[in-house]
Image 1: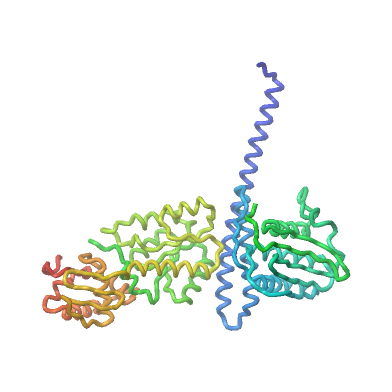
Image 2: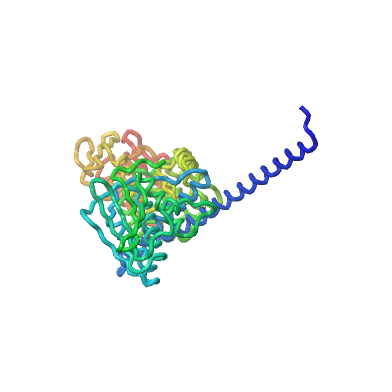
Length: 239
Length: 253
């Protein structure tokens, strides 16, 4: 088969682009690996330092626990970043979680942000407390994102309310704002890099819900705007 | 010269176990060492493999926590050097529990760590409470292995759990340290234990100096072992002591 001069030029150009693309990807992977390496040390040191602070007289246990939860969540994000570099998803750890304690820690961690924005942050629980099978840190990640979103974009008081029963777990964040600018399903799909921070936080919360076999739902009524994580009692293994 | 293998000795020092921390990230190292010290461990610190090997050979820690990304050599080389240590001629206890603490988190990294001989692998960042629980589990496992069963050396019989010893069936009235010395020597009969190993393992000394403690206890132990006591507890001049079964006379040096 004869290959014309034009054909050779096209083939050469495609090969050169492929090589260039491979080189760029390799460099990006290296940058990613370096960033993970550089983050690992400080997060490790910060958690150990916090353990030392917790031993001191006058340390506030609630605050220490809340900060530790934040640092542990950062560790999970780091695992995700590291896994993404290898084309994988971060690990998944189902355990018996004291959800009442967990959402209290999430609220405590975000209280300074609420105070800075003049938002009152309330916590409630309906029904019997207990342990719920879930990935603790990812659940904290989802809850934290929903609260942060409500503080940042909602209006007035923000309420976090949990409820668990035989069917499952529901964690609802309510604010006095006008609600989400679009349906959840649209906001969590992020074409061309997304639609800003609100969409990203909701996308994370929706994925956590989905990986627990549940869903993220939103509705508005006379009390305000509600975004809820609904998780079934028996979570499915992650996809 | 036979010097390696201080398992029984380390068990004596369990009240305040010594941990060697090999970590080059200064803040992590400081905070981890401080936490472990508050929790009752004695801590030795090294930030490179060369120093870690020196401490393993001279201070005989009960457990080592090893980071992998070290400035002079990969921490995996340290694992290999420890596990390949010559039990007959080296000073490093090849059976020391090794816990890897690393930012290398993939399955392959973990497999490499276990293949090179680590006993546990913890990824950074980690929960200190979990790390401490893992350290305790490793130390418990080592202690259980060491303290199981009766020891017999010729006519001498030792029950480590009951802290009782007998000579030809007659119960020996030994002090706490005399018993610990006898048990340490009986853990590997005929092996020569250095003065440093015995003083560290039985008395918990980290610096030796010019103490006569070991010699005076060995003297009393010999006397309690009867007229032929010096045939059991043998002074290897210039090095240390060993326990014989009483059928061979005198020191060998």
